[in-house]
Image 1 (tube, rainbow, N blue to C red):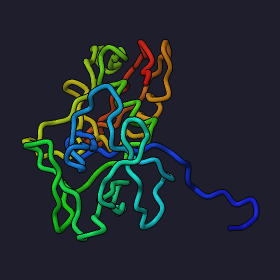
Image 2 (image 1 turned 60 degrees about the vertical axis):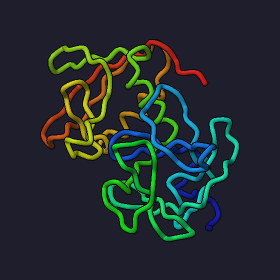
Image 3 (image 1 turned 180 degrees about the horizontal axis):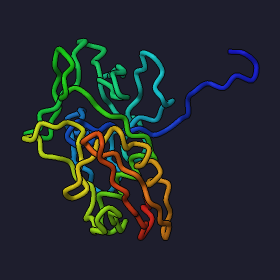
Image 4 (image 1 turned 135 degrees about the vertical axis):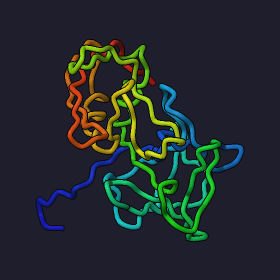
Length: 216
């Protein structure tokens, strides 16, 4: 490292979301990761690590009290569009989900069910704020319609990483910066964000007012 050189990493808490909008959560009775929908609160099962992740990184997982948990080591394998796969150091298989239940399993290859989106602290806070109608008031400037909150499409629609603001479908991965900015808002703040639609030429100007802070 040259004198004065700054590495392109910051230290952050990072959660992981699957392609259908569920967050990985540590279950102590199984000593494994399960999947839960966004619930307006922190969940066990985050990593505290340099971010973006270093190459061949095997993080320590933590519970809601920030204590390390007993979990077989998983190496983070970067994929396209900022996604990652989680590879078992013991077997070489990849953590996988089944949208019909809340459990995780392992698979020999990487497809949609083995891809996860890292959620740094600000992004995760923004998602909590925009999925809970008691935390934020949301209005679409395009048609002046009030929006109840962010939701993910059902697995039956087979559109991974696509979410909706009521009937307005957006690309989840193309709006991570918006979620991070929302996560940094305080009570009383109001701002308008340009959300990229699921269809490439669509854009929705969404006004958000924070009604209260999220305290943990």
